[in-house]
Figure 1 (cartoon, one colour):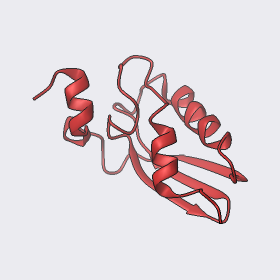
Figure 2 (cartoon, helix red, strand yellow; figure 1 turned 45 degrees about the vertical axis):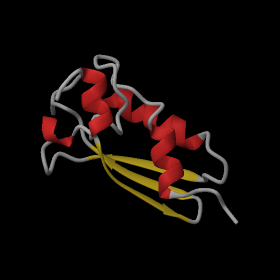
Figure 3 (cartoon, helix red, strand yellow; figure 1 turned 180 degrees about the horizontal axis):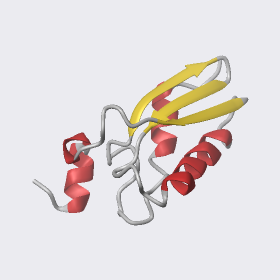
Figure 4 (cartoon, one colour; figure 1 turned 45 degrees about the horizontal axis):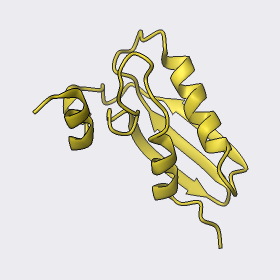
Length: 101
């Protein structure tokens, strides 16, 4: 039985940070969906701004982090812009880290 679950992938993605913001990409609300099927992981994520120069770097970090997990055979990270990211996407943990109420 594989330990590869959406929850495990979500937890692993908490190790990936936007270099400009000291909050992980999960708590920033950048992860829109995660699908796990027989060793294949597909992630839909966005960025805080469409022109963010760090986008390719962040997507690569996310892909590498998931690729290190046991039972992962393939990782696809899709950049999506709909719906656009907004500060309302930040989790309660993320807001606490940023000092936002």
